[in-house]
Picture 1 (cartoon, rainbow, N blue to C red):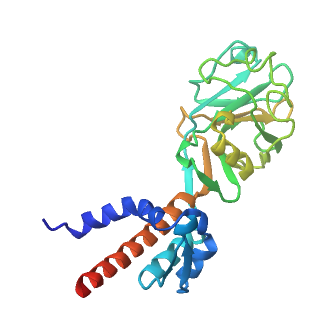
Picture 2: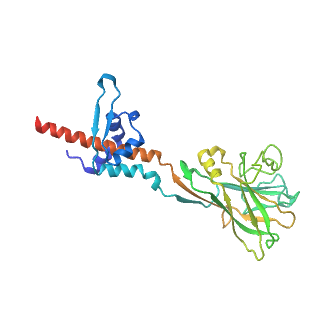
Picture 3: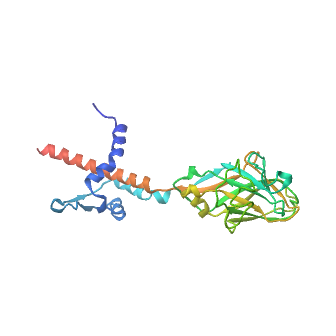
Length: 298
């Protein structure tokens, strides 16, 4: 029965790695050798098997040189993709403000995230983003956190708002001011980083509700991608005193928090498989030609 070309090609791709291993041990290959092959230079490979060692000089021809060259350049040509994570996996705020429920209250279902810097009214938004869709990818540049300022006191006056990397685990639906960390409140340097990962001035004359952005270092996002267990999210701190309260829209609101990230896939596996597939296919074709030639001369 005649096998269709698509099925044959699929089988060849799936078995290419095995074919290549059978032809040459990986220990004798290097990226430089592959590059030379791609450039059209014949390479001599040696089986290091003692008395049975033999050399095989394989002049790779088009289109395999072009395919292999494409595989080797695949890393350099991978475009960065922009990922907009438009909703946190969880958000809330913790507060000691009795008017907002006090230190034992939970605010996971509130439409606003309160950020208050006044002593005895301290309130801190908490946000966490699911980055599993970026697993195995490399962050390009920095990320951007965008929060929608829905209301606040004295929006016409500037105030500094910092963002910190959270260092402890928390559950949005149960965390309170008293249960965040080992002791009530926020311990900077223990519960969250000692220094802010981002800072922004919020407030100006004539300010209306709008998005405000913070630049989050790419290293912070990359660490969360590489080590998901360390992704405990971000804490927002309003450094202003009285009459400078802020409220940001939460994931329950109409202007959800956003995290914008640019990343590229890790190219290693895809590139290696493509290169091996091209080499395996080339070896198969060469053996087929040799077998056909041997049959004609028999």
